[in-house]
Every structure is written in structure tokens, then in C-alpha cells.
Image (cartoon, rainbow, N blue to C red; front, side, top):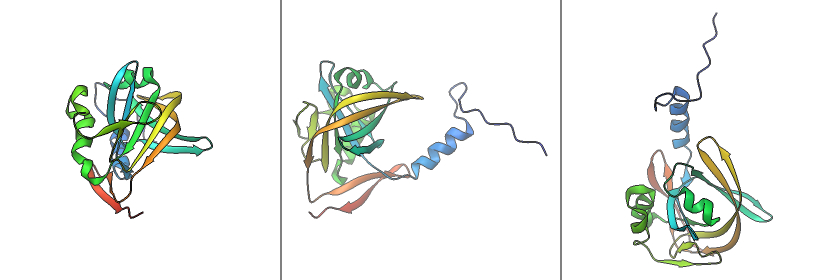
Length: 178
């Protein structure tokens, strides 16, 4: 019996391989919080929507954010080296779309009420949680950079319904009561 040839892990002419399509489909079944990642500093102000955020350790408090190196906001984050992870509530679906690239960088911050914490990165006032961070390390994997970020400040909000992304759509996860 012949072994099936090993499938290429790279795409050709812009088409996805079977493995890439399978991976994307599988990842769509991995529910994740929806976040707006913001930055402000020497490069200017920018933000994008992301679900690729994860805790790393609590000593020191550290999280990671994944960012495509081809994203229009990439250079802002790489130069500023600070960011804020704003975890969205159910009522932020439209704001998530705006920061997902549907409007210009200049117009993204026209929606919502914004303030700052330690780093000067924009904090969404009614976010469920905001993690204000300094980027400590950047590691490249494939098309993305993994930003390892030390949390310098945290802002909590109660009485909220969280927004998650699952199966390529928004859903309500739960209701916070405390």
C-alpha cells in the first residue's frame, strides 16, 4: 500500500492548502473572547480586533497577543511597544467590526468612550476588562508576531454580558454579576 504524499504546509498562488483550510475550520470551533487591542505612542494611535489573546503567567502578570505582520496597524504596535487589551461586552459588536478593519484607523476611535491608564494606550471605558501593558518580547511565527506583554494596570467592570467569537459569529457567553 502506498503512503499518501505529505501535504505541503505552504500555499501556492494565494490558495489555501487542505491543511490550512482544515486548521481554519477547526480554529473557528475554539470559542474566544473578543478584544480590541489599542496602542498610542511615538508612532501614533491605532487599534484592531483580536481573539488571539492568552494569559502567560501571573509572576509577573503577563499575557500574549498575536498580530499579523501584514496588518495595517503592525508598525504602530512595534514602534510604540505598549498596548491595552480591552475585552468586549455584548453591546460592542459594532465596535468590534469597526476595529476589524471595516473603517479607517482615524475613524475607529470615534465610537466608544476612551481614557488611558499607565501606558497612555486607549482604554475603552465600558470594556469588561482592560489590561494596560508594556510589550517585553516579540517572537515571530509564520505570518504573525507574538507580543509578550507585562500587565502594568487593570481596569474591571461589573454587570456585563461578554462577547465571544465562535463558529465565525458573535455570541453572548455569560452575565457578570459581581
